[in-house]
Length: 316
Image (cartoon, rainbow, N blue to C red; front, side):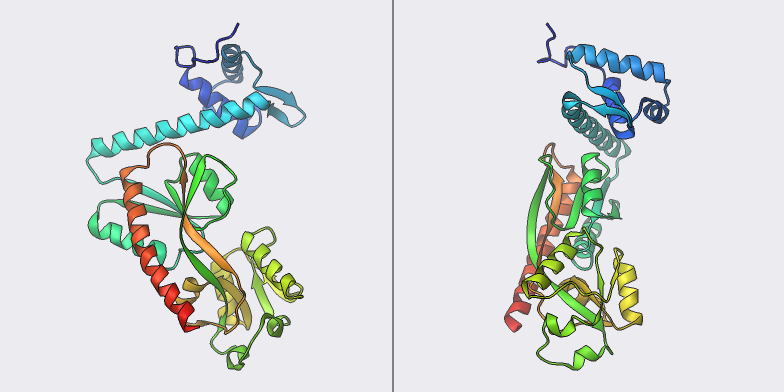
């Protein structure tokens, strides 16, 4: 009978983990072998060795290539976690060996881009000028996947459900969403505006499927309105900003992002949408010292932002 309870008895090799992860990610033996720079027979033999150790079948051939079984899905998930921790350990050793402050890699989603992360980075660099901060922008789904593969240390921005128990999230503050337009937009001269008053305007909205787009649609629906038909769907904040500056197009963005755009002004209309802003991390494993440092600075800045947003709410 196969003993699956002890996989550290010497039979299981690191290459076995690399093999199954590559097969799962590439979807075929040929592509996985090319990625690993080994021959297909070597990869096939390694897979069979691992399946013999576990006593279960991890993949089956399908019309689309190699599909993981239920056992394969579970084992690949654990294999990815083990490989991610080993990469993290390698980074720690390298930082100690080279005698420098190290690196922290941050994923960034829209909220937090204008104030939270820039101020936190400035404080980190002021104390540790040799620490390298790498910032990567992307969708929540792409950034969460990068966390799981250890390509990122943490993700900062709007908190969207991770949908994976290997990730944990920390809320920092709530940020209202505003409708903004360029300074000379005629709507700035109108008082008592409601979303209904702007329904016929040109809008720039996030693409369908983006969480903020869903919240906008739900808000319009709750007011008995349909999603503006006269719209541009744009997934790039920089492109939406440029469109708003050049045309009378309304753009929806987090309050603090809007406030940093001197040529764009929020309209006096309440969408009733509030975003939760925070940090997403791997649930397992100990964060690196540089990650902990960045988290402390993010928490400091978030406390100040909560005070500012609270003041705005009292003024309105």
